[in-house]
Length: 286
Image 1: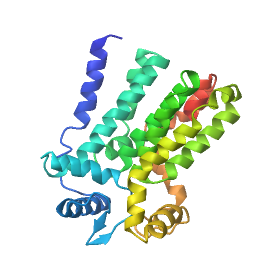
Image 2: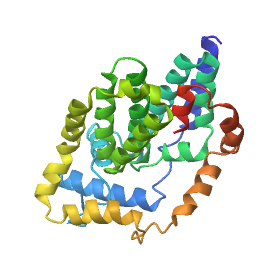
Image 3: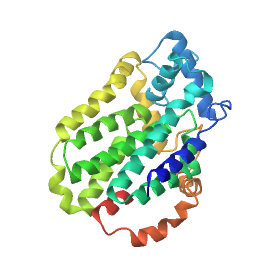
């Protein structure tokens, strides 16, 4: 494949983002996050997320920092609020395409990007003012850099730690536990990688906690209810179904993902049967 194929692929990506600034806030979360952002910007508040003058600790700070930075740059309205998600989604596409190109082929790189761009759920999140696109970007960076650390230089693991730290600023501590599950999976399914997993954990943990502490520590010092509200209710409580706003049973996420990533999600069964031979393929299935 030549440069023209990449130009066409990226043109398709660009086309999918046309008009992200042209419609009003339509989702409940978008409206709530926008109101909190406006309040913080009015008060020049960069630590404590507030809504109607009260601490609002549903999600961490990163999505607000990103939106406030765009507004400070003079970008107007919905464009400023959604631009971080757009940029994060483009970054995710670039990472996935680049990784697939290096590890497989030019053709696989282009198709991986086109498949993601054609997935309604992925692109919908990329055009909304929510933390999800930022989370996807940093988790993708963490997973891909971790593989690089296993196959090459262990210092890639420091990038894994940094991006996990940013993921906790985007969505909470859950990404760390998901990553630890991935580590256990790798040790179990790809045992030859175990000797390559030994370095970098102490300094990586320090990097992760150092990045997360830029908001978690001052927010905890500012609000006595931080632990009970953010950690217990908004993170642990959601696993127990205590969220009364987003009333979704756990099983409902499966059809949402299958439909949101259609038609390619329905090809997973065939891929599962044929694409588990190499260590990289086993890793990517995780």
